[in-house]
Image (tube, rainbow, N blue to C red; front, top):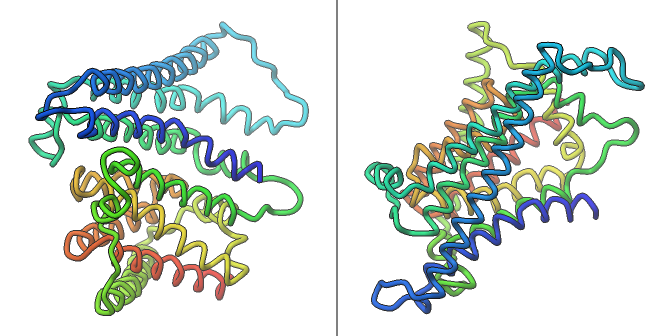
Length: 354
């Protein structure tokens, strides 16, 4: 239960930001397109919220970077040995500090720059966003946290993260945490498009593209999911044939994070149904109509940082492209069926060959 609560708590700042941003765009607080006092206040709070968040992350990253700079020049005496710690792991962590620091301060700086209206007006020429819309501003700027998350994984290295997350003794069941994360994603998508502020529940679901799928759309979703599985396996075999093998650290970390789910029917269903609910609602439902196909797919790929820079990362990008095209052609409900079919099928294959 503690882990579930921790998962939900980490997303509370984003929920607060989205409520503030949507409140600033609420028709009740605007008259004839002009902002009233309450709307302006919420807009200012949104900007301040984002600015403080990025300034904090920038300072953290800069301090880590500075610490590594001083340490490498002998300014800090680091213990040669730490009780109970792997010396090689400690050395690897110290060597990665400059990159870890940069993974925080560089995206944070970009997040701050995205608060500049002139820069957003330039971006609005290629993306279907409104540069003066607070929700679009907040979403675009906050997306840099996904870059922080991805670059942090790359900076530390998958092998190091695997060693840090490996816990002795009984392996914990990730199912409750995964459901908590994906249900929270679904709520973020709903609140992000204006539920509780600008739209009622029905309007919010319609904006997300969540409708009752027709039997034909369900069959298209299932068929597309199975075709994606076949395509992913074909690409993997082709890569292996030309000598491009899978990174063993990817397989190791994935096994540690998701391995326990492969041992039960409910675990495999969780792999498919939870991701279909949360990830599709956010990426294909909320973000795609505003960020466009390529940027949304790129962010979807970056979210799967446990794959690092590997063949699996390319597969996730290609799957995201197909899901985006199907969303544009049909609706998000159809892509949920595709995503669930894809993940469940891979889960079944992993269970059979493990």
